[in-house]
Image (cartoon, rainbow, N blue to C red; front, side, top):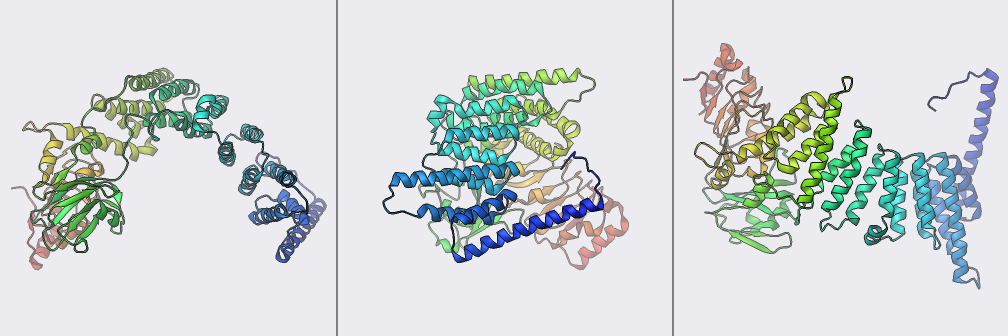
Length: 603
């Protein structure tokens, strides 16, 4: 055990202790063998209960003994004496099960986190006719006061509450369980288990129509309670994580229909192939039910998932093709209802779903929701201000991250620059361990801002991309410190030309989700090699990697495996400056009679 001082023993004492342990082990093994012998003979009687009780009291983690004990109890409960009434049988069985509660209590004192003991206790309680659920709830509360993070006990408490048949309406009236979690939280703000338990109860008693949200009044009330936790121990993450959950439970942001649907359908010029974008990743069979081509036999239509993973079984993007023209497409709901018919000349795009995904239009928030977010922001700002005046205390990530999340929910457009500044500070100064998460959020908000912006012709970029879908759209997020384009997957079927010059791309994998990509400009990115070029972007005809880190022939050799590539630009790279490797590249192209135009220097 920890913090127990070891006392040196003499050789004689050691020998005596070893003999005592050996004697206990022999006795234990004899009882174990006796149990197995009786089970083999089918002797499931009172002696079996006595033997297993002694064994489990010494080691409650042996599942086999618990299983044997349950089988024995079921056998004894099934016995009937002549003339014995049902009431008498029920009382006798309850006494038998009550003894099991005593045994499990004894075992849990030995090991409070014994899976077998907690399961057996729940099993016995469920079988009792006259079970005292209120007493059992008090037992769990007492156990949690001893160890507030015992997840076995929390699970058992949920099980007991369910046995009590307390409906959400009854909980809403009496608030018994929420009050319990509140008592546990007030006793210790760091009790993450209590915060989590509260999060499982509130949606049951909240009048919100969505299971994935809470009503505004509940969110406001909960945020007020969190203020004490923030200022008492700003370093503790439990209350901050609970706040993050509350912010995400917006009733006005809940998805009413979570079923998968078709977001866009884009046909190529031959009309023999179409790229289908879905709202969620599905299997090939599921995709075939959401979109069909009635003029063709379904067996003649191939459906290939588009993913950066070669063996992916689920995808959001599918390339559907046939030997002849596909004809019009019919979109269906998961239930099979016809939603729309799509002509190849027009294609299809669910503009409202795309706008929502990229925060193009400001989301409507209720006054109560704005007030709740404003209250949380005030607390975070006050805490940041207070900590900034403490010279010996460094600002921790939680107040700044929670403030940033509130800004995202309140108005990501208006507070865009503040969100970017906060995320950059979190990634570089306050929480470097989660740098990748913050960088992913930075990519998302920078790309959303780019899509909302207006180009030189005065067109909103996302509108231009959607309207150019059939012939192929351009994407030019240049010099934006981007590391990935994963957040643009909903637009993947529309784009044929991408220029991401002077960003932070280190490989080609972000471009695997663009099945129509023909032109890619990667100038000024920290990319070293072009491995798997053909597998990732098989249709690319133009590839520019000027001012990148490619330095040898081997770094770019993959370009010669491409059947589509016609122009390759590698100006101002270490490779272009290396005469030996550059000449090797040209000789290799000449020997293979490659149709690729190699451009080493700008004209």
